[in-house]
Image 1 (cartoon, rainbow, N blue to C red):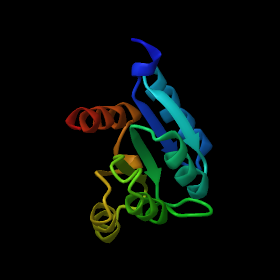
Image 2 (cartoon, rainbow, N blue to C red; image 1 turned 60 degrees about the horizontal axis):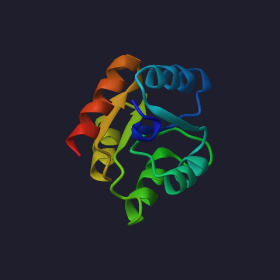
Image 3 (cartoon, rainbow, N blue to C red; image 1 turned 90 degrees about the vertical axis):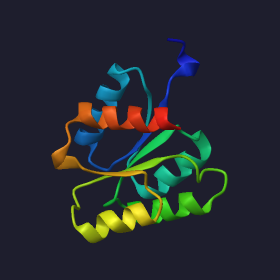
Length: 128
């Protein structure tokens, strides 16, 4: 597969260990991966790198995931980039808020293995 044909996933996650697990898994599956470890950098990277899809943690330093999601959806240049919220917050209100603000999906970290997250990302990218 040619490099420029790779789907580019941006992982915005402050848990380095977890972020690296996802990074390895996505790279093994042929994705190009970028990482950001706080919300501010995550938002800047979405604007600069324009990834095909974003995995966004909610509890982040500097700017939480909801703030990043809101800002991304308010920016016409990046608002169509699908964002999946990846979090440990499983409350119905959080899920609903995320979806209302434009997230395409909401994955609770403890419920999904990295391979399942990759499958979800694939499904969303191929729906586009």
